[in-house]
Image 1 (cartoon, one colour):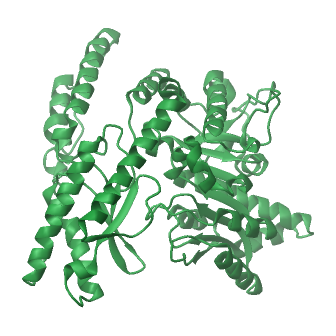
Image 2 (cartoon, rainbow, N blue to C red; image 1 turned 180 degrees about the vertical axis):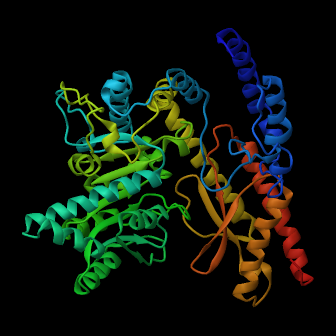
Image 3 (cartoon, helix red, strand yellow; image 1 turned 120 degrees about the horizontal axis):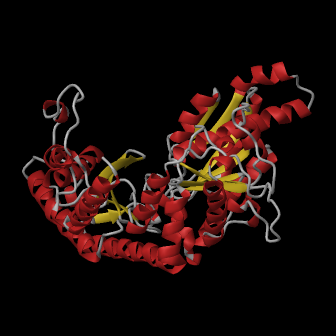
Length: 499
C-alpha cells in the first residue's frame, strides 16, 4: 500500500468509524457469540499472498464485529467507562503517523517535552499539590513529575518497585549491609484493603514482597485504625511495612479510603503512600469534588486514568510522584547505545526510567488534543452530566420502592439491590442474593443494556456505571425501564418458586 492507496482507504476508514458511532445505539451492547467462534471462521494459517483491503474490511464486518462488546455504547454500564473521543482519536492518528519509540529525549524531543508539559497541565487541572509538578513556576526542575503509563496496574507496580528500593536505601542508612537488605526484602509487606484493585497484589508478587489484605469498614473504606493495628501486628512478627495503597473511588463501590488517616500512618512508619484514583480521579477536574480527596497531598505517588472518564482514548494512565529520585534509581539501567543528553534537565527526561518497558508510544498527543479541544470547561461538563444522571437514576430506583441503594452515589456509579422484603416475607439471605444474581443474568440475556454485578460482604448487588462519551439521559431512562421490567418478572417468578 503506497501513500496514494492509503489516502483512499484512510478516507474510507474515517467514514466507517463515523458510521459506527452514529449507529452504535442501535447495536446490542454485549457480544452474543460463544467461546471459540472465531477459530471456526478464520483460516488457521496466515496468507502467503497479499489480500485486498476490501476482503479484510468485509471480514471485520462479518467476523470481528459480532464478537465485539460495544464499550462506547450509551447502553454500556459495565465495570467503569473506557472513554473515547474524536479529538483523542485524532491525537492517536498523529501518534501512529510518527510511530516513534520514545524511550528518551533524543528519540524525539517533542514527545518527551510535550509529555512533561501536558502532565503538568493535567496536575493543575485536577488541583494536585505543586510538589507533583516537573517544572516549578520559575522554570526550574521540580523534584516530582508526571509520566503516562499504560494502565493503573502498570503504574502501581512501577511505584511499588520504587517503594521497595526506597526501603532498601533506608535500611542501608541505618547500618544494614547491602546483602542483608536484599535478604530482608522477603519481609517487606504492602498493605491494601479487600476493596483495593488486584494490581496491588500482583505488584507484591512481582516485587517479591508480602501483601496484607485488610478488611474494609461498613462503608467499604480502609481506615487509619485498621491499618495502624495491622502494621503494629506485623512489626511484632518481624515484618517490614514498606507500602500502602489508598483508593479514591474503589472498583466495587467508588468508596474513598481514609486518605488523611492512611497518610498519617504511612509517614509515621516510613511507608510509601500511593493513591489509586484510576476511575474517580477525573472528577477532580471539578472543584466541588476536591474536598473528598483530602490527604492526597501527602501521597508519594498519585495515579488516575484519563482513559476511563476523561475523554482520552485507551491507553492513557497518568502517574505522578512527589520525588522521582527513587523511581528513576530503581528502574534506570544504562547502556552505551542509549545516550543521555545534557541540557536543561527540566525537559530532558528519560521516561524509560519511569516505567517498566523501554519503548513507549507518543501518548501525550491524544491527551493534548483532548485538553485543548474540550478545554477544562468541556471536561467538567462531561463529568457533571454523568454525576447528574447517576443521581437521577438513584432517585428513580428509590422511588420505585423495590430497590435499595447500597453505597452513597457520589460519582457516576450506582450500586443497588432488590430489597429482601420485595422478594418475599421472611426471605433468607440466599434467596435475596439469588434474585439479584438473576437480575444481572436476565439483563445480559435481554441485551438492551449491559451492566455487571458484584458481591459486597456476602451480599450480591448490581452496579450501573454511567460514563459513556455518547450516552444521554435516554440511555439512563432505558436502563431504568429494563431494570424495573426484568425485576418484575423475577419477583413474579419467585412467587412461583422459580427465578
